[in-house]
Length: 113
Length: 117
Image 1 (tube, rainbow over the protein chains, first blue to last red):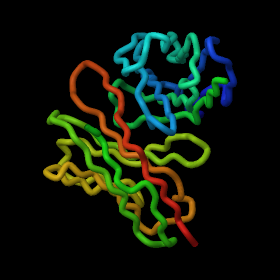
Image 2: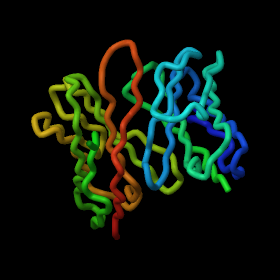
Image 3: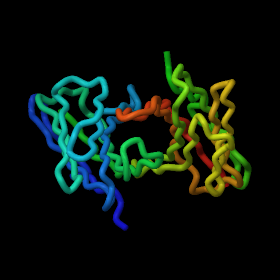
Image 4: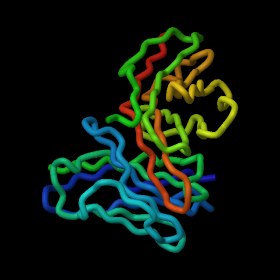
């Protein structure tokens, strides 16, 4: 069974640009959540989607957005990139909302120059 | 205040020894879940073990066990018979609340565990 797939693995952007990251959950999983990991702030929750609806959002500015498609695949978008957005963005999937087991992908490493 | 505190930034342990990674948490919610994840250098977060606040027994998963002391708000991870492949960052996390709404995980800062041969 394939795991959580995140693309691209690495991304380099410049300030002011926008970026879209993709996450394909494990087959059958309907919940997808996103986390940002930085050396300074650690791991922080961005948002969670279930059945194409955003169920909860962390404390991030409106520049961070996401969506989920009918096949449970999810994308997150960051507009007007700032240097501080440089981070590892991790996607996690689970069968149900608030499931005990979250399965993470390897992440997308975003560098903003 | 920190919701999840991991007081050991780094640990060196001899192979085959048991390891205890500390985690304390802070919540006023009676319903919560506690998680441990392993993150090797590849970046992927690997689920290790889960403990619900109402679970009567300590969770175990193979070589991993969770020493849950509710009154002390502590959820230490114990790895028995450590192996070289256990070298990684370890994160304790918590999810609060119950009900229809979804809440994300709150993570600690992590412990960098290095197993020495």
